[in-house]
Image 1 (cartoon, rainbow, N blue to C red):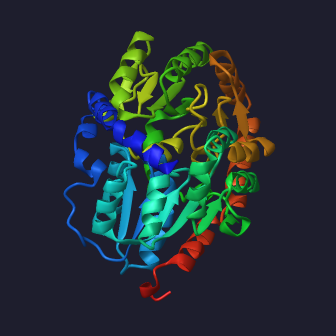
Image 2 (cartoon, rainbow, N blue to C red):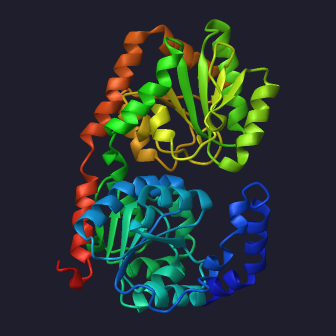
Image 3 (tube, rainbow, N blue to C red):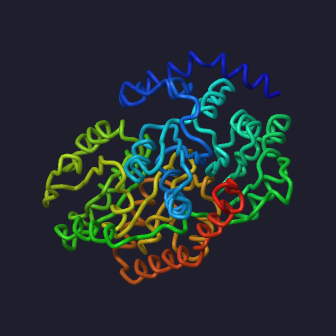
Amino acid sequence: MRALYTLLWYLSLPLLFLRLWWRGRRAPAYRQRWRERLALGYRRGTLSGSVWVHAVSVGETLAAAPLIEGLLAAHPDTPLVVTTTTPTGSERVRALFGDRVTHVYCPWELPGAYRRFLNAFDPRLVVILETELWPNLCAAAKARGAKLLLMNGRLSEKSYRGYAKLPRLVRPMLARFDTLAVQTEAEADRFQALGASRPQLVVNGSVKFDLTLDDAVRDRAAALRAPWGERPVWIAASTHPGEDEIVLAAHRRLRAARPDALLILVPRHPERFDDVAGQVRRAGLGLARRSRQEAVDDGVAVYLADTMGELLMLFGAADLAFVGGSLVPVGGHNLLEPAAWGTPVLTGPALHNFTAIAALLDEAGALTVVSGEEELAAALAALYDDAGERRRRGEAAAGVVAANRGALQRGLNICASLWPSRSGL
């Protein structure tokens, strides 16, 4: 089965390169560093005895950041390789860690590419974030004697059904993991149903609960908000195509009752920034763009946050937060960043990537689920009309985050148990 799977990957190579070229029309970085996708140009033995942490893009990188910082602090003499698959993820890794880690793109799912990658970086431990389950990656790393750890593992019911259709491919892949540290008991049950053994599984919670709001982030948020005074400010974060239109329509409805309301709009992907700016103008709403440091005066209705790496800070400048990827069938994005600020959280119904976290917030009365522009506008207006309810929901959201901390330290302990022996552990 894996041989057939690998053949399909090799046959797909022209399409993979075409996809890079196509995405590069709006995000030129996709057309750069393409050799890394095939692990070409690396010198054998570049590193020795490294630890490899693999994330995907910005969200996974930010979630993994406290873990990576903990590993750097605990094991300063062990080289750390961090891979992503997107340019935005690459930018975040470099901004957060600089030259303290080695960053390259993760190779495509090709045995030859993994052989060259492993020859260069020689990882003794491979830490895979969330759902980056790749049969050839796992087989190649295990064949080289590396230990395999899935950290912050999640497996939605939808993903489970997809994996269950390929048992001859999935079961051997899961068997190669030394530890599968998953977020909830439900996910442990799904992994076990796919073929993982119970001794492999650890219910660790989500490291996303362990995010910190340091003084620098708080100060930047306060400085951004200060000039806006008492204006109602809400944020629509990580929006996707099809959602921006709904958000802007809801904002126009809200401004009919509160003409001074300000929306911080944060599209998910940077290649869409200009398109979203055009949508704002066509909607007849005054626009200021953060990347151009444009002033937010009384005529501005939408503040387009067209920068990278500032989302956590931007949540701190808003009274209410809508998290995107949820009014379209994406599966939602991180609900915990606004919750950590004590900000009431709104979302659409498509939450299959964050089922457990959404359930915790909902049980605490901290989450509002809306299905379109009318419900979104009505929910925003209701919360602005009731300061007490807004405060209660914000406190409930912060309480959920505080009550579920601890996964980070447990994750570091798991990493320590699998750490390369020459590190002294």
